[in-house]
Amino acid sequence: MSIAPFFDLVKQIHDPLAPRGSRRGLTSVCSAHPLVLEAALGRAARLGEPVLIEATCNQVNQEGGYTGMTPVDFLDLLRGIAEKVGCPSDLILAGGDHLGPSPWKTLPADEALSRAGDMVEAYARAGFVKLHLDASMGCAGESAALADDIVAARVCALAARAEAVAPGRVVYVIGTEVPVPGGAAEALDHLTPTSPSAAAETLRLHETVFRAALGDEVWSRVIALVVQPGVEFGVEEVALYDRDRARSLSDVLGGMPGRIFEAHSTDYQTGVGLRALVEDGFALLKVGPGLTFALREALYALDALRGALLPQQESLRDVMERVMLHDSSHWAGHYEGSPSQLTVLRHYAWSDRIRYYWPKPEAGEAVDTLFSQLADIGMPDPLIRQFLPTLFARLRSGGIAREPQVIVIAAVTDVLDMYGAACTPESGKGV
Image 1 (tube, rainbow, N blue to C red):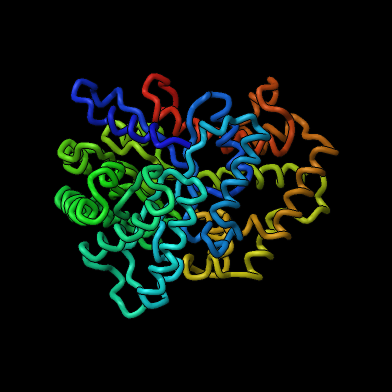
Image 2 (cartoon, one colour):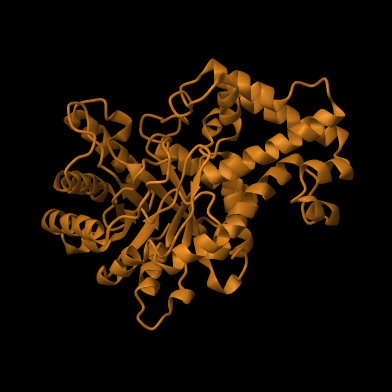
C-alpha cells in the first residue's frame, strides 16, 4: 500500500490552473461487512482504480472491537476477498477512522489514551496507510468537549505512536465532525457548516504541536482536515449539501496548502450533491451506513420474493427482529417512539443500526438459508420485477447473474458507482 494517491488528490485540489469542475475525489468505504467489501474490491478490480476501505475504532482495534477483528485480522479479510475477486493488492488503501480514546472514554484519560496509542500503533504496524486521529472526546472526569489545544496535543501523541512503528509510511487526517459519527440522533434543522475560522484554528494548533514534536516531514503528511460541510443523516432525516452555505468554508481551503477536506456522513446524498462536495474541495467522501442500507434493502427484497414462493418459511426480517430484541445494545438509546415505531426504525432507519447484527450467527445462518433456497427454487421474472425493480432490466438481460449473493453485491455496487461518478468528473454518470 502506498500513500502516493493521497498526495495526488491534494496536488490537484491546489492546482491553480485547474478549474473546480476538473477536481477528483476518493470514496472512503467504511464497512466491515464481507459483501460490502466484495462489492468495493470487485469494482476496483474491474476499473483498475484504487479503493479506500476504512475500519473504525469501535469496529476494529487491538482488543477485537465489536467485529472481533484486530487490524491484522481486518487486513487479512481484505486480502482474502481481494484474491477472490482478482483485485491487485496495490489498489487497496486501508485506513483507520476516528482512532482515539473513544472506545475507552469511560476510563481515566491516561489509561484511555494509552489504549488508544496501542490501537494506533497496531493499525500502523499492520500496514494501514491513512489514519484519522480523533482525540476530541473527554474521558472520565473530563468535559465532553475538550479545548482545542488539548486535542491537538493528544492527536500528536497518537501520531508519534504510529511513527514509531511505521515511519514515513502513513498519512494523517485530523479534526472531527459534529454530530458524532454514525448518524445524528437529534433533528438536523440546526446543522451548520464549520466556520472558516474554526477550521483555520484547528489546523494552526495542530501545526504548532506537530512541527515542534514530530518535525516538518511528519506535518507534511497531515493531508486532510475533517470538517462539517453541512451534510448529515439521522434516523429519518437527511441534510443535503447546500454549497452556498458552505462556500466560505470551501474558499478557506485555498489558504491551506497541502491539505484537503474530508467529509463524513455523506450517506444518502444525491449524485449532484456528492459531485458538488468534490468540486468544493471535500475530496474524501465517507460512506458506510448508506452501503449497508442498500445491502439490507436487497436482502429484504429477496426475502419478500422468497415469501411469495415459500409462504411458510420464516422470514429474514422476523429473524432479524428476534436477534435485535434479544440484544438491544446497538439500537436502544438511538431510537425513540412507540413500540410500533421502534419496530420500523430497527429495520428501516437511515442510521441503519441493524448493520451491527449481520455478524451474529443466527443472522448469518438466516441469510445463508435465504440464498440457498432461492438458488434451489429460482426467481421468476414477474417476482424479480415486483421486488427488485431497479435491477430487473440488468437481470433479464444477463448483466447481473441470477444469483442471490450477486444481486446483493450489485445493489451495493450501484451506490459505489454513484460515488465513483461524483469523484470522477469525466464520467458524467450519477450527477
